Amino acid sequence: MKKCNRCGIAKPIAKFNRDRTRSDGRSYVCAECSRDVCRGSKRKHRQRVADYGARYRAANRPKRLAHQAVARALYSGSLTKMPCEICSDKESEAHHDSYEEDRELSVNWLCREHHMARHEEQNAAGLDSIVNSG
Image 1 (cartoon, one colour):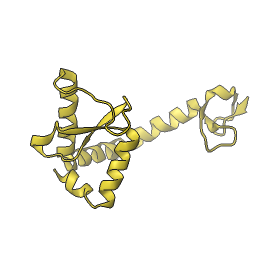
Image 2 (cartoon, rainbow, N blue to C red; image 1 turned 90 degrees about the vertical axis):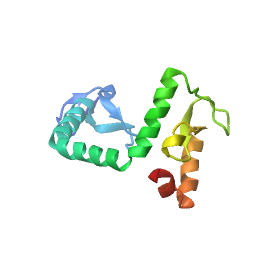
Image 3 (cartoon, one colour; image 1 turned 30 degrees about the horizontal axis):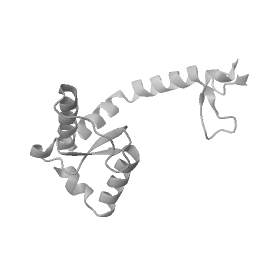
């Protein structure tokens, strides 16, 4: 049993979300209170979140269109998901070297680890702004 710091009710440990930073591996607030806080915060900041989403979509239009084109092509079967080009992991993601309109389906298949490493390389080389600008 553990006592929630928000509602003060003692509950079974399973009623607390996992939290690696805590010594017992569980949050100090029960899942129910955590959910209530999250819902309240979403309601309170709904417009700000919507505005951020709109700004992000506008600023990253070529990127979004390229991702949507890949998703549509995968769904229709005109593009086939391949294993990672580096380690052959079957759980791969599509990486765009360019978001230009005529190259939307020109992708490299990389696992999450190699995909993030590729972005780090591009950021270090100063290529990320070129890649993302379309």
